[in-house]
Length: 305
View 1 (cartoon, rainbow, N blue to C red):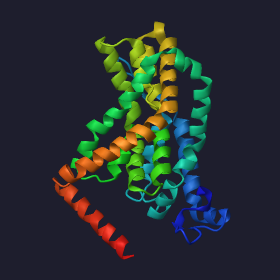
View 2: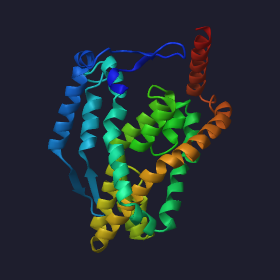
View 3: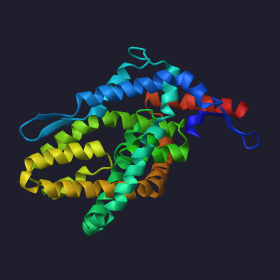
View 4: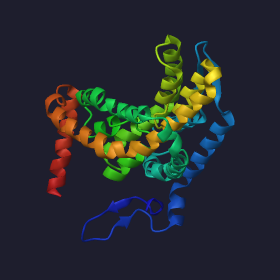
């Protein structure tokens, strides 16, 4: 459906209309988006992965960081190479871009399923730790004035699997998807740097076993797992193979269970907590009151239509 363009209007009695009638029409309108994305990927890949030694570990910067930074710089708020219309068109292609990666995750998870089971219950219990953002971050987001965007932003770490889930449940143009996509982008920019440093700092304390840190690095994001596990492997070279194996198994488990935990636990829990907290703390700040007023105006306009 994505290649035919975004749905303009959909009703029960009327067939959906699309922004473009043919692929050629879409390419003529959005050619700059595709060529720009190809150029950014090529430049980022030429720069390559950079590793900076910091004594206690290593700071690893992956090509995706460069691509995101360059893309933001070329947007309508900076260099204006891309227009707001082109940015909106590109947002609908996010799921198309990550679709092959989601398929690869499924294939990898199936191949490593016995490794996951052999790791014991620790890996399965670790998956419940991904629910902590709901209780820690969702109240803060609501307090700062976020509305339904807070559900998408705070239900998980918001990597590829979670972004696909939110877009499928709520729609690509929903407030929840905007929140999820925002965290996905910010996580891609600073998440790899943060995870690499955090793994080094945690390892330097000596409080956790290297295997526990390796399992903690598999949060569902390949680049974050790679940054954290590479830092751990440089600190514990004698156990590097085991560290990479546990990190990979943890990442595979997150890919398998993450979508089910998100669908059946995280999202219902986020909605319940949002419904409870928003009327109580969502209008304390000026930003919260303004967002609530704008939401009421939108609902009133929708009723009039």
